[in-house]
Length: 437
Image (cartoon, rainbow, N blue to C red; front, side, top):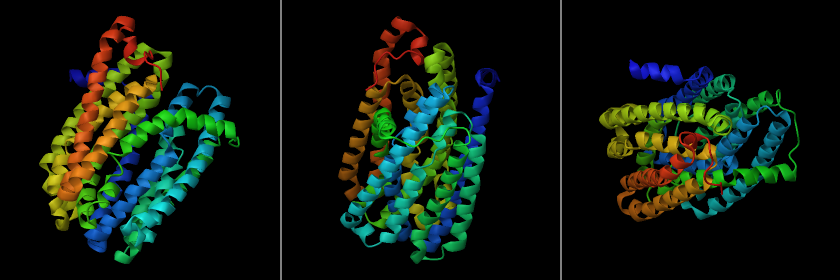
């Protein structure tokens, strides 16, 4: 009762509304795809579904390239200057120009990959549906509405398009020959959502054509966050693709199935972090003491939620695999139990890294930690995946996250005495004691 009273007392009303909207969108983004997985595994077969997961992993890399970390850097810029209409219009124009440029680079990269990776060379339709899905998602201007804390309408729009996409899977996918359509349907839903959000965006923002200067400024501002996101992607969202380079599609199917369930659990913490991030970015500059208070509330909620989710996934792993993936993928149970460590670990890592360091512009420390973790994940995957396949890939992911937690905690512990001596509580969320990279 006392804990609930503390949270209610310190939780801002708009943050609660935005978090509720994000949870609605989350339930669609994760629950509906999970609902389609048993049908897809049975309809396509485990190996073709593994190919779809591999192409989706590459699409995630392209999404990262096109999105370029703007969900952090551009959100931060708009949140800090949202009362300056001209500055906001410049940020939007620069981001859209940069995304168009990055899209061209992503397509060129896909052409090279098609000839370099045998499984994708023999199934080009699956590859290019994944490419389109990744690019369409990367173009989405969700970051703008997050920065303005106006997520209710766009969350509803996202729910509608994702629901239609899930229905289309059951209607249009009937056998292994339709595997490419799984990601093609996702791409179509993302394009509809992106177009509608752009129309909503320009109802309140002046339309400005992206100039080279604005585009270059957006790329420069987002570079450090791109390094952060790209390094994190090496051990978070592209592992199915990475495993596919060393293991057969069936092993990719086992790992991808367990990873999707684990991510669904981890994703329950994302709406909280996304709802808090723009407010923390604003308060880090304008009201450090209030930002420190809000940070503690977020850390408390995410810490408790992560522990409960991780324990629940570990205990119920056999039931979850059977219900979500079907009996054919029961070998994924040990993988899911190993990945159940991730919800509490990633939840707290996100709070410390993106909710504390990023709003303060502490990009250099953050990037060093994440870059090393990404390289560690790839090296462990190369060493473990050829022999241990899906379990080796899962072990590599867990080790990378443990490194992030330990390195981040050590870095913050070494800074704490200087921070307390310099500014007290305000240093926790309001003073940039280390210049950004």
